Length: 494
Picture 1 (cartoon, rainbow, N blue to C red):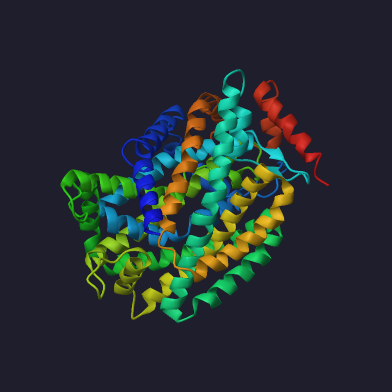
Picture 2 (cartoon, rainbow, N blue to C red):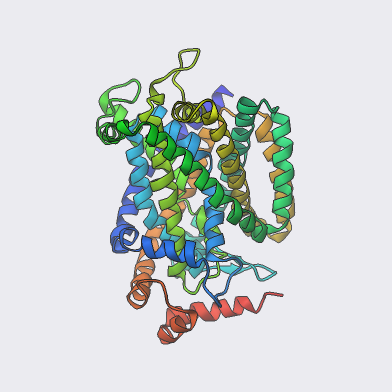
């Protein structure tokens, strides 16, 4: 086990070091932000209205509404990353890591838009007419012609393989293990009990496929998000006088690393950047390509519209939820405390301590445990869909049922088995998913920028109907080809 831990640590250090994912994420995110005209700064309001208020495009093709596609992506991303991941980033990289989580979120919105746009633009249908989209499709269909075709195929199959492995780490065992620990610490429920309950509930939800997952997520996600935000705001009100200094500490330590434990200042800054970006990606999954899989199933009138709706998921996750959690940890000073053995608090215990300091009595620990249970459970469901789509792409529809059964069993294993190496394993697999996806986004950036500009000149407020969109773009070969393809997919629905 020590050998495996060493290999994973070395791989994580390289992948998340200063020469691979850190520059790739930052530069690709900045590049797409420029190419898209700062879309995350000027279109977020309209996108939130479309996704959360209007919720669906009438008469559009797809399996689930735009809101449910957003809820499914939110279910997969609003998980332990928002509770344990934020705390781990602060514990390992100091409060300055939060600044780099913000950077990952801001640039990540442009990445999330781009990958979700492409997921709809190049989606396909399964044998029952259900929509399937994501990097495993658009990397192959979008990157083609001459010498480019093999490149697209290699990127797509690499992404598919990494997604299958990553789903069992970030999406399954990490979530199940976090739930069992929280239930054991707060309510003295044995790990096997939590494991059985999680496995049983997950089996029931997975039977209905994406419609069942999106339906459950659409009901649970708003409740859990509002509950968590309410608790966060309570803590911040209780420590309101500390908020300005906490914000200043985050900005200062992002460039000095003075709060990060050990090492010289330069190493501390690198740690803040490394853990901020890694945990930021773990939290919002922007650039990873996973949320694009949910976007590919959405009922939408145009790929731009779903891209914008999907982009709001990163805004809600990182700019709102991560920020509030981080401020709660910093204003209470919980990140400076140690446990009985003199070790610095980290993960769920750090977040729980911050909420305990800010909420009345012992309610803080129970609140974190409840939110973690809801977050992790819905993440487990959302990632099951991502893994299922990847396994179907690799092995066909016949592999879906065995995958679901294995998924349920591994949820129980994750809940009942110590998983010291799983966080590092998840970081490695997440990073490996990102690399082919970002390379593909760079190759396809001209297409994304060109078609985005064309649509937003016509419908900047996202209020056009399907009929108006069709009438305006009737002479556009790219749009006409997409609509004809969509109609052919509709014909496959029984």
